[in-house]
Every structure is written in C-alpha cells, then in structure tokens.
Length: 367
Image (cartoon, rainbow, N blue to C red; front, side, top):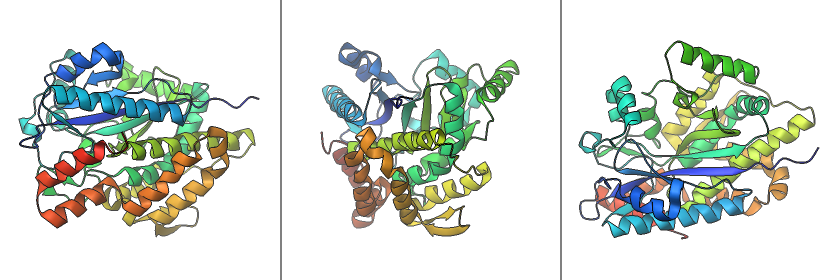
C-alpha cells in the first residue's frame, strides 16, 4: 500500500493594531478587500473587525506550508501597513477590551451573536488551526480518537495568551478559558466509526442544535466538508517558525498513528475527562508545569513528555521530510513559549504597550 500524502493546511488569526495606542483597531474590512486582489480566498474577515484570518493552500509537505505561511504573513503585514495598522500574533490582546471592538457586519456572525449573546461578543481570541489530509472519514475518526491524547502537549507549546483586558491572568493561555464559554468546545469524545460520528452530527442538526458540522468547535475535529483532521486547540503563536514546528509535529503524529495502524498496532485510548486534566494544566502552566503520564499513572514535567512525543514521531520524520522543522521544538523549549516571553517583557518593564510592541516585532521574525 503506498504511503498517503498527509497534506497540510494552516490557518492563522492575526490582530490589527493601532500603532499609536497599541489597542486593537478595526481594519474596516480594508485589509480583506485589498488582500482579495492578490490573495483571493486566502484572506478572510472574522467575527470581530480587529481580526484578520489567512489560510495556506493545500500543501504537500511542510516546506510548501512554510513558504505559504511566510508569504501570507508578509502580505498581511504589508496590507496593514498601507492602512496605517500593525499586525500582531498572540492568542489574546494584552489590554484591549472586547466591549470596545465592533463585530463584522455579516449574516453568519449576526446569527452566532444572536444565539450565543455575550459569549460570542466577548470571544475576542486568536487561534491557529492545522488541517492534515486523510484518506477517508473512517480513518479520520480513528485518528481523532487516538490524537486526543496529544492535544495538551501541543497546546502547552502554543500557549501565548497570558493577559486579558489589562490583567495578568495567571494562565499561560487564557484564550482557551474565554473560548470554553462556547458550546461544543474542548476535547472531543470517542466515536466508534465515521457513521457513528455522522449520526451524532445528524442528530444535532435534526434537533436544531446546529445547522451544520462547522458549529462543532472542538479542539480536534473531523472536518465536516473536507477530507482532513483539523487541530483547533492552539493559541496563535508569535513566530512563524513556531507555527511551522507545531504543524510539523501535528502532521508527524497523524503519520505515526497511521503507521502503527498499518502494523496492526493500536494506540491506547484514554477518557476525555483524563485528557481534560492535562489540558487544564497546559493552559495554566504551559511547558513549565507537569502533565499526567496516564500509562505510568504519574505526573511528569511537561518538557519531559514533549521530549517523549518527539521520540514517538522520530521514525516518520525523514519520510515526511520534516526533521528540521520538528527540531525547532527544542528551541521553543529553550526560549519559552509566547506566553513566557510576553510575561518576561511585562515583568521587566511593567508596561503592556511594550508587550504589544514585542509581539509585533516577534510576528515578523524570520520573514
């Protein structure tokens, strides 16, 4: 059986910043409209007007993904520059208040706000999503069941939202606490097959809970319309190299679980409630805390378990051509996550505008 191509698609949500006040500022759809000329459907508005989302093409490998991510960041920074704005990459803005940020006029967003009210209006958060191509929906459900275990490890690496409305929250990722106000979020449950998954979605549609599968906002989902498994747990990361490294690990995990399956080796499944314990620890402490190793039933440093994760995927990296990109995770462990670096600037300066300046600077490193 030929090795499948585990294609990649990466979506990043950026903040548009007033260079004088360093507050979030609406781009009034100008970036999206101007961007459509060169980027077409790769640039989109989001629910709040101070958010701009970009998405790569379907990429055959991590090198293609890197080229597209870098190109999109350059373009969006240039488009913002033209309208007197800056671009910042973080899971939350350090001090802007959601109450001051207008909602993008759009029937879809109007409907979400009407249904979810304050939970939707206050959802001023920024994430990074990664799609990995799969052959069929049954394989996708199999992947979803197995990959859930690794979500907190990936999330810990991405933590980049320690502030909320001008306060140091004590969390490395407060973004996830804000987003949990939405229904159908968090670690997904276990499904026996694609038909089991599809029946679940059909029931939610039939009973008026959702109008389509895109309103399932889990940390990992089988995409309702594409042949992809979609990771949705990560904060928006500052440096493009961080985005690429974590996306490469995500792809490697899919390839590794597939390799085990072909060898008739199943990855052990764990209850969602246990995985949620690790997710909470990752949100609170990032890579500096402990996670639970459910196999040995003991706490271990998050960094040690991330090293174990890298060992776990090591034998698929050369096939994927992603060893160099995955090894950047070692640098991330050394320099700290975005949250760690934001906090270091704040503790040194006591000034959240300096933190915003730092995020803006980091967003363009390596471009």
